Length: 307
Image (cartoon, rainbow, N blue to C red; front, side, top):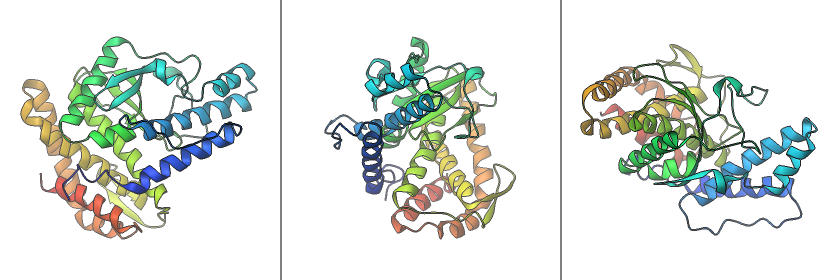
């Protein structure tokens, strides 16, 4: 299996996404028949799946808050205005946003701030949409087309920072296919972070698709967190960080100057962090019930170790 090109082609994910989308649409609008998407565009089913979760979260929050006008907006906008908000990219039309990080809500659905598409949502400014478009193009050029097409549909660009600053990025399980991240002016750095977070989204969907429940009772030392973590978090780190290593190694020869030094330093740091995880990763993988998924996770980890 070539890594990572064939890794992300995992049929149970597509089946899971379609089924989950149908279920959400049926619950919120039972009078309308719900069928599998027939669109031929790249990532169409994944986009429907991602947007359905924004639809669900927004409508549910509006109902709990008794915001009738907002709830009615969701009722009449099941695709949450994505056709107006979206930007064409190398992996299809994406929703690129720039919400105010200081106004992102927090609630019991997530330990981190998040943003849900709604009637007041507007697209990011043109410069940020151009940055994101270039980032997707870089990801495609270096072998991550299907990962980004299916697992980075909505991107919320948060704080602008300088190269070398700490960049925060995250995903939340309630909004699969959505990525929240800080950004610098370099598209290759944003591509790296989109790939990292899309990797988390991919693995969450894969585990849900095979109904794999990983026990919290077993822990492994995480060099990234410098503490013991449950197997779920450890396996996520051992998947998402190696993806960024593979991408960085591929893009590095095309860079120069400060950007080259930044990426080279990052890759060296990740090599040092990943190296001591080899034995624990092999043990943690035994908790993955599907051999096909275990092999995909092993391939990514092994390629990153070889860099």
